[in-house]
Figure 1 (spheres, rainbow, N blue to C red):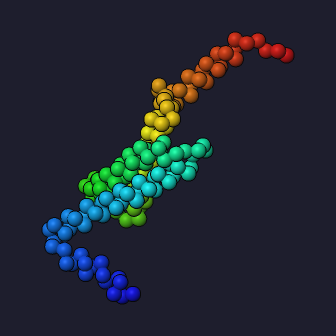
Figure 2 (cartoon, helix red, strand yellow):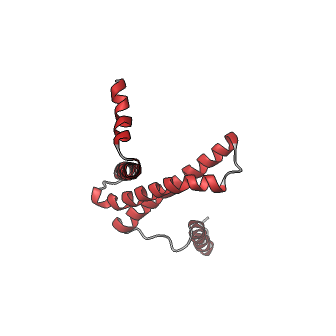
Figure 3 (cartoon, helix red, strand yellow):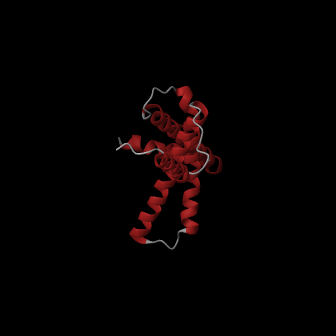
Length: 150
């Protein structure tokens, strides 16, 4: 068991430093991209309330996987350069919340790509709040025009 745990370090030590690190970095990036694609594909395939096919979910899963990988590369740079003033446990909570928020945005973006391209669901013409307000105004106007039947 000890030999098996030391084997990866031994093999990585045999690779020349410059080219080896680059190859290992690219291999890790591609492996992470593949695994996140599988994760998003599984979520987009299982979670919806209707029967989905892989043909309908692959595009959003790929976009979300690429977005997540880019986010995982850029987020530490952002934290290091722009959030240096947040320290301690409160800073950790703030950073964690920002990370989870943008991860959720990436997840929803992939789902919206699937909805737009494969289910042909068009986005709202205005923001959701404006849309709901306009519908409520139309409903209120229609209700005031109809006489009450008492």
